[in-house]
Length: 345
Image 1 (cartoon, rainbow, N blue to C red):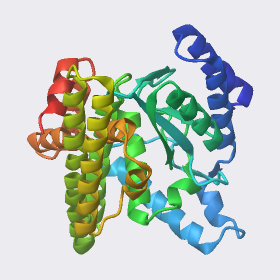
Image 2: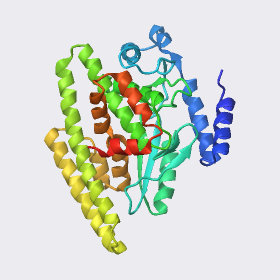
Image 3: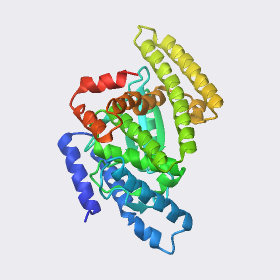
Image 4: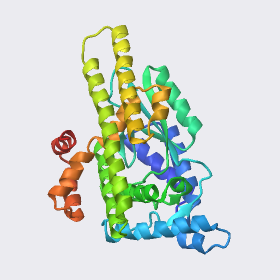
């Protein structure tokens, strides 16, 4: 049985051995992980409990079906993850902090046990995340604090379904389960862009197969159309990011660079808002209204830039998921292959 003391000891030991990050941060991560795990109850118990409300039982029955589908049809890990449920009593599982220097669209990286170096830092309490972001901003960085409904411990612990994962619609909930299980199957420490884009590609393909198997073709077509619209919006962000990267590479005086940076961000934000209005798809209004910065554009790149390459790789493998996974696994130690896949759009 895992106790808080054992979780803390394991994570602190790994942090000390790797020299990854501050022990204080690791201690809060270990405590938060323990608190999350202690909320878990087997889903079948929650469903059988007379005190559970009917809406929750209905959602959890759907979770059970999706979890089984992930194993039988998507060939994702068959383990204890997402077989339990826990109510965290908050809207998000964690709050991630993303940061980038004032004149760079390359995000800062932090190193941790299990995950290696990644382009975000997660906190179990929003106040702590915002305090860390404020410290980074005080040192001249652009920052972003974003609530996250779920995360994966990469199979090291049996991750539960949480109330935060149920806050959106059924399809988003199911897609999240597929996404997090994909991390357990393949994860490249130190390459957030590759790992997150792989999970996004499995999420999208998994949802497509889930809906096709249930002959919900109309719903599937709507989701595919939404995805195409989302990709158009993502490309708009990508163009802004490329323009900024080109600007930052120039020997321009600081004040002039700041002015041109804000001009590019303004044009990018206006373009995205126009697309959102055209597609009736509000996604990034809060970011744009608060003022876009390098951290926003860096985070978009982490999750989406490599997805087209993964989709082409799946097609090249005849849509066969085990063959696709095998091809992706071959890239784990081949940096040039990973960069080639992510750069071919």
